[in-house]
Length: 392
Figure 1 (tube, rainbow, N blue to C red):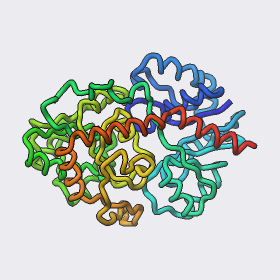
Figure 2: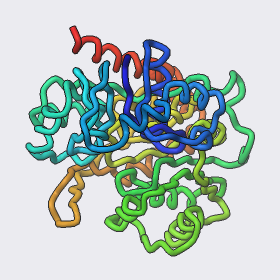
Figure 3: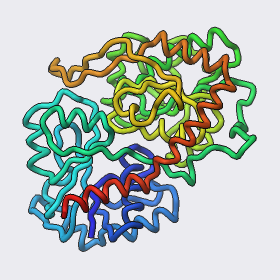
Figure 4: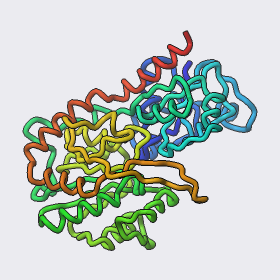
């Protein structure tokens, strides 16, 4: 029996990852989910909910394995998500002969004590990207292997031949930006670059999916020197629109999406022309980027940090780095150094995309072919191989 201790859901990255990894591992070998109960609305699909429910602990088991600090020994290997760069398990009281930790983090200035956590709590640490694996290896943690995220090819795939997926806003050139609103994901760069295109071309639109339920992460945008950030009260859509308006964006040409379950995003992706992803750092391979490209849509994106496993010159227009940004914690201590995307280059590449739409479709077609290989089944197989190899 293989045990999986990860978040489960359809509206945020870790939940999407945990849900799909659990489902696909269960199709490969007997698997149980150790975690808090989740309602059907958090999954959004009755069939997936039914399959996931069969993998979950019953009430008696949950009382045994989820409560208290007493060590609980499992009768099979355990795959756990990690909290952050400190390399701590989600539930330290769960024990097994072999414990595998999945690490996805962006604060890359690691401390020796955190590396020791990786040695202490886990048989092996698995990283969410090659970049993340490299950071851990250079910090002194041996044997780290990357396993990239995946996409569901039944949902995220190119539109049929001859139909580029456009049903709405067909008279506009629609730029898409996704990912929770925060400094790390670079929406300040998106706003500045889009503003230039908006002022040049009357047919340019912005569709954004920036929902962020974590206020502390949202507030990291206060460190940006590129935009005015003075959010007021209101719904999240209203707050984002206020920020956009404060920075000269014409809200008549903006669609701000409310929070949606991830499988509902495919139609949104297909009704846009190009995705803009000037992310400063990604510890994983960026699910929104992957899903967007899997739909056969072209991107203007960086190919640094976690993006480097996905983005290349044959499937994207690449934004270069224009230096480095140092991130500090609340005590002023440096916790990360990230490549800083070049704003001027982002504008130039976005303008090129506007002027060369046929060429961009070719990049999108290649993106769709490339991302078809990054399935959740392959992610699960990657975990399975690492777990089985460690037990030999």
